[in-house]
Length: 552
Image 1 (cartoon, one colour):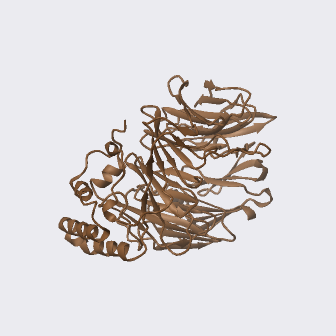
Image 2 (tube, rainbow, N blue to C red):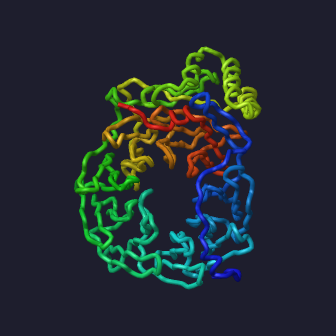
Image 3 (cartoon, rainbow, N blue to C red):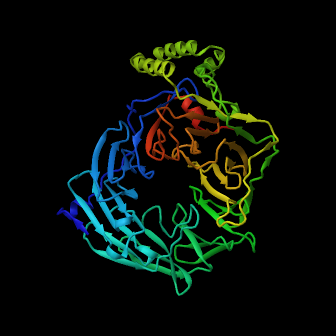
């Protein structure tokens, strides 16, 4: 490892982590998406490679890669703060927990390069040599880097402060499914759990991150351990078997087996696993197309969610993406029903709906006059944005149609002669408020299912025209962003569902999304570019969109 001469005290120093953001100043487009006081501003598109784009943990910076170059921008203004040049094409980037450092992994060359934001002239290079490199990550303290060598022969722990090296033997490769992980840290950063394979048997080691000493070592009753994951509270470790056997095991911090759950035998087993933010629930998605919810008291199943191809229940709201975008009429951009989900109408929103028969020009004039009476200083900016939306090619919002039941969803018949069949629950995620669970069944690839966790029932189904590539919850509220590999980004909240065309020249295909920690902006990633979508809300309408109401 090579690092320039710097005092270890400088490396050990930690900076205060702050949240919050200033106003977005990025030039772009405006779209009145879910009410007269909400806007979506799109930045211009920037070059990108390998979908490598990440916000810093403190929310101040945005890092992106263009081949061998690392670009760090201000997350508010998108102005370039630092530009770093690596020795080869970058395959992976990761911020340290304190946002002071960022690592770039060059797997093809077995290298890791570390850069500092506070001291741009400082740099670090870690060369694994002939052992190779297949994975690299930060420790929670942001001062150690864990490198996994080829064939998972060992994990090397490098210290940036002392330049010391530690080795962890027998790590197991857990790469089956999106949620499979062989290494996981507790949320407080005190402990590391590692899946191991030795003598044809699975083990788990729990290490103390402060000195990397072994705390507990125990074997697991699995045929082929597929993944491990700590509960958010750090008290329980979940470990599950491969797809050939349905088995999930719950262990305490001292290695005691708390419970073992098996839903069925002699069929394909677990495909995805997710903890709820409160650690009260564990969602287990399996190849039979069902999600089973385990509780934290008895670790027994409290309910199971099926994913049928036909929706018959009239209490379930089914949103279908419209095939053609309607003409932009700003007076018609209030959120669709159910109205009860968003709470009572604000005075502004009520007036907006009363004028829904206006054309776009009349709606613009009313909106500008209304905003001018609120804040004269912001009139110029609001008028400039509105005229930009009216005179240019605007990103036209498209509200999903509420389909009447019964609704038949598009299903995909898996190929029986191919490995990794497209069946089962391929993705699932809890909302940050612990109220909702979003799931995707690989046999119904165009649909996202929203489940009410408090009432343990299906709340809504979002059917898209194309297969869903990924979805991610807003880290601050119950708002879900979805992308399908097309030119639109989709947003769902308890108030409704909307899609917006990403503006700009050429065909911008959104392959992945990444939320800012404040929930005020969203990075949209395509194959060769990325842009930011700034979500501006004013008090009242923004609250109605984001908060959860009575959706019985």
